[in-house]
Image (cartoon, rainbow, N blue to C red; front, side, top):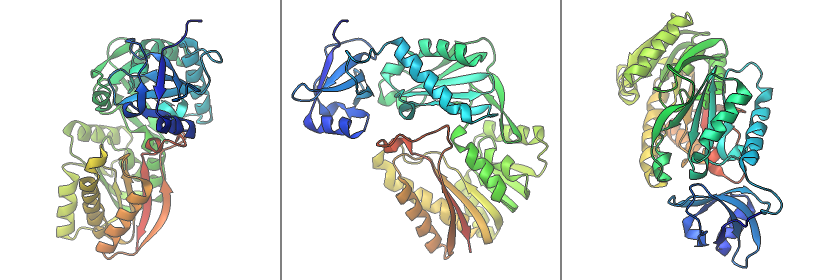
Amino acid sequence: MPSLPTARVSLKGAKTLRRGTPWLYRTELTEPPATDTPGAVVAVVDPQGNPIGQALYARRSPLALRLLTRKGPNEEKVDDAFFIRRLEAALARRAVLRGRDGLRLVHGEADLLPGFFVDRYGQGLTVQTLSEGMDARKEMLAKALVERTGVSHVVCRDDASGRDFESLPREVRLLHGEGSARFTYHEGENRFEVDLLGDMKTGAFLDQVDNHLRAGELGRGEALDCFSYHGGFALALAKHCTSVLAVEQDAKAASRIQSNAEANGRANVKVENGNAFDVLRRFDQEGRRFDTIVLDPPGLAKRREGLATALRAYHELNLRALRCLKPDGLLVTCSCSGKLDRQGFESMVLDAAADAKRPVQILERRGAGLDHPVLAGLTETEYLKALYVRAL
């Protein structure tokens, strides 16, 4: 077989890759591979020329290499069949999630398909590619997904900010199917509707499904769901809570909460189209109190340089929420900011509790569900944190 272009990396870069981290930044690339092919597969060697494996090479991204395999070109051929085998393995891992029609089918690096994400919503799939290598192969992979899942539509949702980091254009389009891409899926006994071409993210926040359901098991009394989006937490809480107020700033999403609540017969869910920071501040000043409060804000720390500002915002949210909780009230507080680690998030919550003068019990520390596995050695794959706290 023809020899692959070769990327030589620094001693530090070689140690990073051999330690288990599958990413290598351009600063650790001492000799770039001689290729202009988008998303080319290259052989990776250390300063002495010893093999490290094979990787996807990005021509413009600061993240130059994404390791695919530790085997050399003579041991394992990286072609379309290689990627399809990885795809089939990811689908097989989800077989344990029986009965779920809304779940992540491929979770990027954690499923050994770097920068490739697939979400299922009933008969529709969304595909998101955050690496040049997977971007070049998304048409092929979409075809393979249709053949293996039998879905009617595959939507490309390559409109995330991560594409800018990779110097890839943003786009939203159908890769398979025609016409509308509106589908329904379930979270427990609740049914939700999504527009895969028009809604945020890939349609919904499937990483929170298990946390929605757990909050529904624990929540009681009067509940407040902040940053509700389509009402995942709100509808789960509605089963056992006497009333649920869902707060959502985006008018389109707020309207969807209302329609989802009506479709599921959740008459005790009310919707307020407003800014959660302002609403919590108002409730605090008015002395309004709740038995259950959920905080599920968007990622407030996209880059490490914005972490300090994000922590102040998280602190403000959690302080206000804790002050609005009745004695023995439940706070479900979340962060999807990858730059804020679990320890930092928990420390912030405890600082907010101290400032609110509320002793707290930590009931559970949770993350994303089984369909969003974490790759050991790559902390970025453990981005979601959820704390279930009782304020005494």
